[in-house]
Length: 181
Image 1 (tube, rainbow, N blue to C red):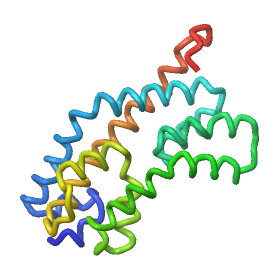
Image 2 (cartoon, rainbow, N blue to C red):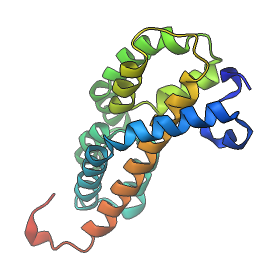
Image 3 (spheres, rainbow, N blue to C red):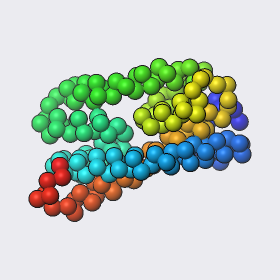
């Protein structure tokens, strides 16, 4: 299987043994940063849950926005019932760094189909970008770079979601008198 066929970790069963090892290596590489990611996700989950937003909205932000800074910047705007464009523009400005990451990744993944590049862009938070570029500081024809990236990104996503959702549900148990939000 070539890296062009690795669109996401969802087709992991069809990967070669070396691609699976590269994916697992990406996960192991992310493990060291997992405590920081988990802590940020946990705190973000608590802050969103204690904001007064509906539980379904908070869970939706965690699952679909997948950018802690944008989530936290958007919550007060949502609570003030500001227009969607204001919320969207704020989240976009907060996340402009991802444009820089995408530009840097162009040299690593530019040959991939647009769908794959869009998925990589969505699942590429700060720490995955930093760890990937540490491993691959220069563009490389290495076909294992794609599964390595997916190991980083999918484990980061899992850590973020689990810690954020734990924070959300634990926040419901924390008295408001603690002033955590």
